[in-house]
Image 1 (cartoon, rainbow, N blue to C red):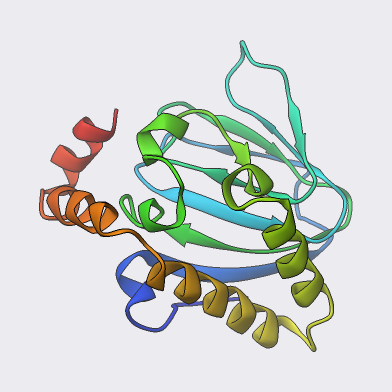
Image 2: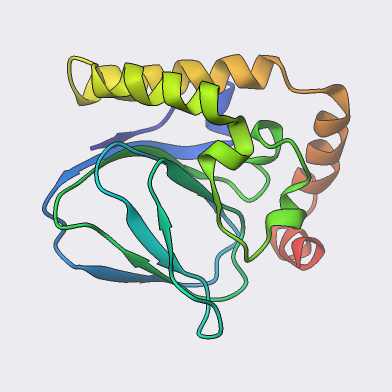
Length: 174
């Protein structure tokens, strides 16, 4: 299940989604992409291998992947349950404590980005939500709250990057 978030998040995020159950495949190859991904995991850890020279890592709480320049191998647990978002190329910037380019080709846990107390509290609220619609609303509210707390320097960088044509944004991000 997925939906477009309400404004102004819709200018940063393509869609918010909920995924539950037995995945149709155990592994998925995510190609290089000028977009970003945020996943809040609510079940068994999933695994990401970011290139052939890097070992597979487990992500129990979720992860953030910013504009990968190489393919990733994404492994789902037999039963999966998560909520997340597919971001526009510049869209994740307001939600990160550092420039997104510092995380390029380096998936990180969502705990590393937002801190243990914040993600534990969000995961608890999501896990006890009445259903997928409420879960998407809770994630959207969390993202909206974080967007309102975004420092002014983030906005000038986002405006400078988002005003360029897509090919120029991709070149500047790599």
